[in-house]
Length: 297
Image (cartoon, rainbow, N blue to C red; front, side, top):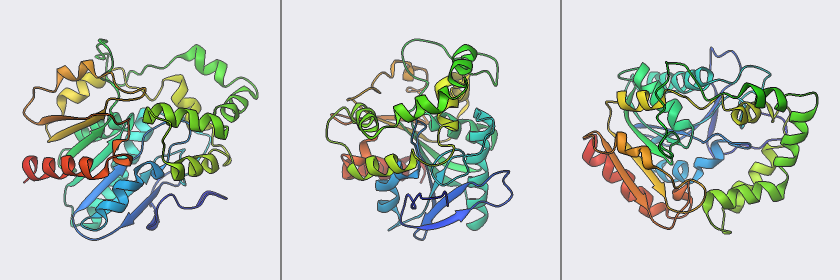
């Protein structure tokens, strides 16, 4: 585990084999496999999917991934890229499949990690059974994201600025002061009422060695795919989008490119923020369970 960082979830902790750097997966429960993937931000971790992990462990074998550079996975000085994150999702999914007789699994990803899960599913037919994208990125405004495969929204000038001598670590420290973490969670929730347990964990996570490395890559734009509309349109699996109506993540105009497709379902939870399962878990799970029952049976 990362020094001084307690487990994000109450479950068995696994370190994935055959990975260049340590990648951690939590597991609990028995039954069909379900993979949960947290969002990407300054202090992300598997703690962001705790309500779903705790709920579904009663009926599923549920797994939650700490992506590279986050939580208890290694925070090494390496290139944090779309490929690195997507490969981590694929490695975790293949490891899980091997534990379940190579069964395809349902997977849930939050925010930017929806892009990694979507790409992983397109590149690995048969690995996943269904996708759920909670407050997914790539659908904001009216911009078409159809550049060549592998292109990102990387800003080289911003990246150079962020990585100036001592500046990146200083900036990260300012952005992850407890009051600032609370501010951004309030913007995520669209409310002053946030999950205090998640806030407390984020404050601890932000003070781990090399905690700034992956978040600085995130700020540079290199983890946002400029071809993601092409990727989303290639998904053939049953796919559920769930999002709220409060906070900073409410613009989904470009969902129109997929919302009419028979394998896509879009559900809006009114008066909730970007992680609605923290706020209205029963309502969220009703939507999730109905999707699995109707679209994957």
